[in-house]
Image (cartoon, rainbow, N blue to C red; front, top):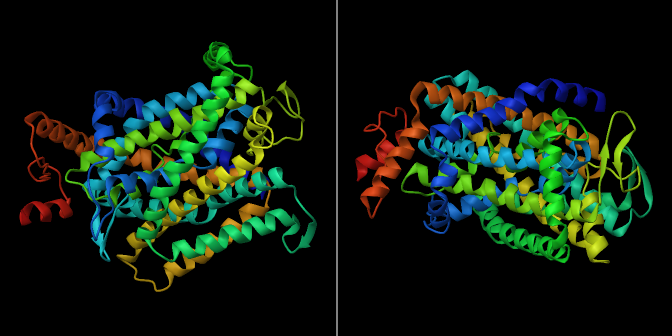
Length: 494
């Protein structure tokens, strides 16, 4: 299985996808005149404006749901892997992909709002919907929907639960080893997996409102607590910051692991963490109740900053300041070895060791606790995304029991990931992320050249903002945007 997954990743995560992610971000940054910088204050204002409705959630709730997908194990174990395999310079490329990716996030989330639908009393949308309506290619939309159900329902949940299991085992020990049909497993991982699956089942059987209510409380609290701990460690070692930033920037262009490794791992883990271009964020963006599609696009762009520039940077600085990392070279060789050879880079161990070295007795349990909430809320976001794509398919097929099947499969994948090896879990996760990124980025680029709906929406929003309107409106027909039936009906009612 590991060999097959590695083979698939070699094809999917070729240099072509790395440069496609960076290129799409640069392209949309230029086309929006760097909206991620120009409208930064507006993003902040919109973050706390707007209210939920019976059919949709608020902008902040949509941000929390999408952040619950973004802020996860990628921020803790993913950053460690980027450093462990790409060197400190990989952090610089995570920053680059975040800055450029904010424009991609604006585009894909605005598209999700423009082409959303009302289904079963709630708003639904995402790449499958806008690919069908803006591109007019239903077959391509179906491929994306099926790929996303596989990625978010089967491949990705195991990455999150695996990090929870590894963190708990590192913090509290493995306990007795137990022989099972799945191999020899530690008692700690079995108990952790069981608890995660039970709590997960309780929430996912409650629907999107319960997911939104849970994540809007947990995500900000845990992100803030994590950043506070990171700030304490950074401030205690503030004199080292110039050296650390110099190492990150210098190693980005003349890195010890080779330029390709730094870019490759930085972009791969950057996309995995902030999800810009991956096509996951638009699902939550479509569920928001807003007056204009561009508003939620701006909020989602801001979430990329929170994820990578705040949380990922906090992790990277803790690891680099304390020297709690190894850098893998070719084969079994190490380019840098500060820790034991058996400390896995694809795990939370670097981060736990970093915090433990400064705050003894706190590091391992705190990271295990933070990872539980970060990763758990990410699994909830994955469920919502997979469910949305099943709802898309159900518009045509009407297969009974699909949602129940998704719940069972996702819970099984979560348990499986929690007890298996980190490399296999991360490898399967990378396959899922790569499939979605290829399909979505190609889709949003084609849509741009066909009709430019996200750019038209941005210009319309900025014109109304300049005019000082008290209530924003969106008239797709007036802007030459076709098949935006939800907004056409809304403007007609007004």
